[in-house]
Image 1 (tube, helix red, strand yellow):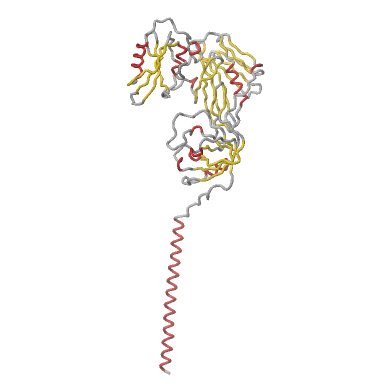
Image 2 (cartoon, rainbow, N blue to C red):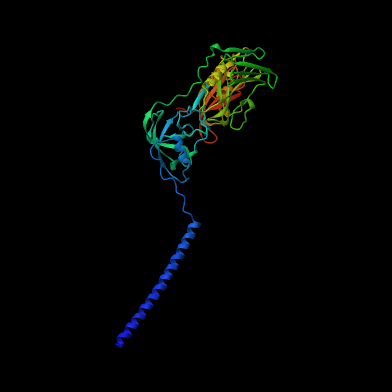
Length: 459
């Protein structure tokens, strides 16, 4: 019995020791667990969970505005995103903005991609016989349509559901890369892209005439408009033609002295020709320069100023109008300006620099001579061309007018009045090692160099 009692006592003592050890271990585990929780909490406070990125492309078909807003919210590293657009496909603009080539791998016609919008947008308009770009303001959501080479040549509808993608890694270095929509296919197509809007019907038959005998200039302006004329206030004469409601206004300014300028990359145009574009345009039966000045962005458009500039009677003449482009395109205003420009008449004889078209008054026949011979002309042309390894492609003795009309560009506007011109076409190598074809103009009387210009390579 004693032995049994001792055994039971020992067993109870051992159970007490085991319970105490278990309690210590449980307490230790609790402390460790609590410490770990604190550490994790501190780590979360110092390193917050990254914000969630947009989860995939919008479901279904979206309009352009919603697509633009969605793209704007994507992170820079979002990568390619599939998208289906319900969009208007506008014609690509015909005027290329700038001559710089796009970076490698960018669409080769980057400056002429069809804009995608929610409402139809005329990308061009015509004024004074010149086509100009209608600029999309930032207030109009738009994307630019890229058609991959794999699709070949396709006829674009005016409207449809466009299946494709944005943020293509191949175009990440392109200008405005986030606005490029790369087409995969089109469904539910309808209509044909709208053509470039004409300048409208000016209805000039019932217009009223305006003229000034002192400067020998006349034009027509719309019936019902007023004409206010001032003189010798910074110009020879100034006339402002205003619509009855004051919403449209065309100004004519005649400034003493002619304007001369040869456009090149390193020259600054004089004030009458200062603007974003200078294009040959119609001034009655003659030619001037249409100067396009792009101003600040207006409501759904841009402020624009057109100046039709030409020389006449020793003066510089400027016919100008302020205009808003974009969605509020005023085709009636364009038609009025075009009609007034087309109605310009000259009562005095035109000189070599009038208006800015020397071809108009150039000699149409070859003079009596004597002239240098063919071999001499070829030798002089070769010497002045700066080409080496020269071969002669063609040579002609022509009149002054024929020489001016031989090729577009600066050689149309040389200042000399020769009795005849030798036109010598040469092929050879430039000092830089490139192959070239060059047209050299020589005064046929004495062989003096008049002009030279590069020609396209022979077909």
